[in-house]
Image 1 (spheres, rainbow, N blue to C red):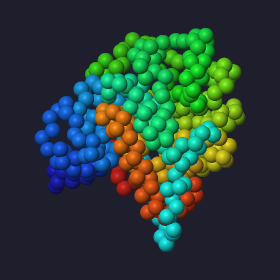
Image 2: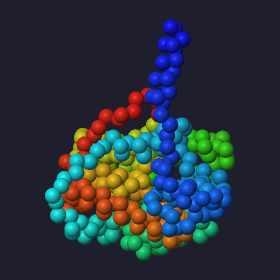
Image 3: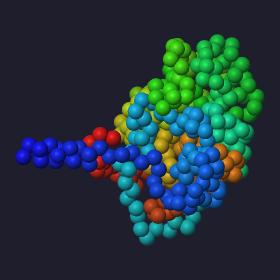
Length: 372
């Protein structure tokens, strides 16, 4: 009898501890057949953003792929970023005229017009995916009329990333940014030190020596603000308190992000933070512009963030993976995602994307119980 009880407990625990699926089974592996490791499938075989992840994983050296894929600790934040969208369900409406929906997809960011409510988020080391680095990202964004947010450190090493800079160097950087015609600056505020990225340790991405910590405070923000006329967006906001502080300090826009789960294990997703702001300080979405990224892989993910009041949604890893195909790959990824946003919004019953709000979604309790 005791043995039977133990077995039952173990079986129950096994069901509770579900595996994490990196991507859904889209049939890509069967479509490409015996594709050799180090080879790329045909671009036309890419039918969703997850396919680009598969292609990059098969094509890139393990070190290169790991740099993009790695996340902090047990990678729970990385997984939660993608899975949390399932905790929010749509409430579709029928008998709606959605024939003019596509004309409502464009948006504005800091007063500039863009064709779609999503953009290419800043990500470094583009050359790990393509010898031309970020060139394909820039050109594809231009072709499709979306924002490309360039990482200042796209071509620098980890050591250069975290070296201390003087205010004189900051001023020189800001002057250079303004000179090339940038529309604004994103100040990353969630990287006080390098994240504990266990996966990356295998390839030396995180040396064990102490590099020190980055001093990012409101005083530092005010100093930078006085050094440039460009708007400064705070990237990496993870709670409603900091969002309120941003409004109080005259920040024109905030960017909800946990750095793709790369900085701090179990940090909240952008969707959870957007929900928190909506519940505790919804006026913030009217007072300043709010952007968000993290775990977005489908058009429906974008719609859920927009419903809370987010103005534009960023994607990092998917476009870096698409960049292995060059500009055409990035452009295809943009077009696939645009098509999903349009189809999902129309099936939701939206005639105008700007009319999307929280009345179109509801929260649900996760069906999974146990460890993830």
